[in-house]
Length: 514
Image (cartoon, rainbow, N blue to C red; front, side, top):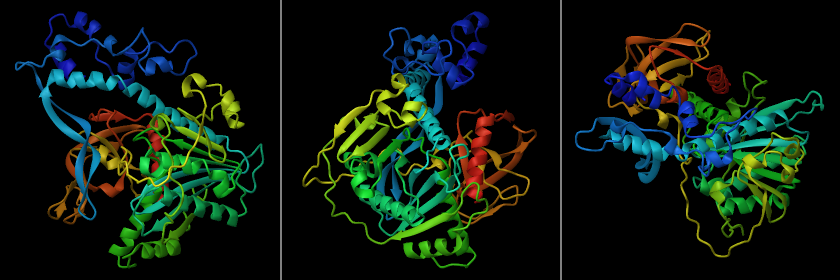
């Protein structure tokens, strides 16, 4: 809206023009302009409106000024950024595509044309992201005895999961939910459904060892095709009873690029401790097994057992890929966000998860009270495919890190172990970069050549949720200290965080300090 504001400032009848072309204060206000009202006592927009199938609303409701449609040579030229897949070099000098912000300089009409294209799908994307995260919170709050939640995530070449299950001292009135971080380290760097299956076996063996007999396993994963969401991955889930003995195996998928959470902080902490041990010459870590041995000997205990009871480490040397677990395609699997396995080879699938109604909490998804939002349950019989070749499909979640969101003007929350401070805030002055020589910033922080950093300015805390920018004193910070990034808050001289964002950052900071 910065460009619209500049155009309006040069308009004679500004009040009249602004009434027709308002300056929206937030994304939500802009979305609301293109959607039908939620209605009385309604928390969400109608699905048909979000999916742009409603005849009464749509992107056409967002009126553009003549200047905003202009793509001629005389049009205003603007610089902006959009996420695109770019080729990047990874370890071993391999090239692969990665989703990253790319700077564009175009005529203003090109920018607004892209905005309209984005608005055609983004509200529904945002709704799915928020809904899936709400359902995770709902099942954590209503976890039944003999149930377990497992949030899966790959972290470079080791695998970890966050386990939550009903504790031994639980009662129906006072459930005792225990959280543990479960890490699987391996020298096998092929991240596929076979690897995930080996991890599931390790988790089952661990739960058996502590005499926790799981009835329903609730998994949450990102949407990476080769790891969790391909036809082979879903086919594997359909055999959950046979493989693990669960009565029910449910896999829920976060919306694309919205799978970041405490599980990332858990993995980042372990890697950071290993880096520090090497720098301080307290450990020699040259192989995956060295990493496992260091972590198992030094990192099992946590500072706060109420946040995480313990860290559990397991090592896998070889992955069994000689399994007859290749399946024929499953229709529209990218639209599916929940799959339920209750009988060998049979999956119940639906567009979104639901743990917000009594029917779904009682495992009666066919009687869900939110069908208009999550869709009808469909039954799919998985069918094995013989002699198929595996092609790794890279989804937007694959190799996507929170630091990839950082660009000039981003608000970044940083981990700190300073007493009296929960976290630091900074305004990023650039994207991440690798130092070509050693540098010292204005805060006397020293960083050696080759360190990946971001530059910017610190904020000073002036109230419980208020912050003031410290100008003319530049800071350099390592990307390893980044907890949270948002581009939805204007990084002005003075900012106020919402309570929800503040609590989210606190949660990530607590995970990093364990």
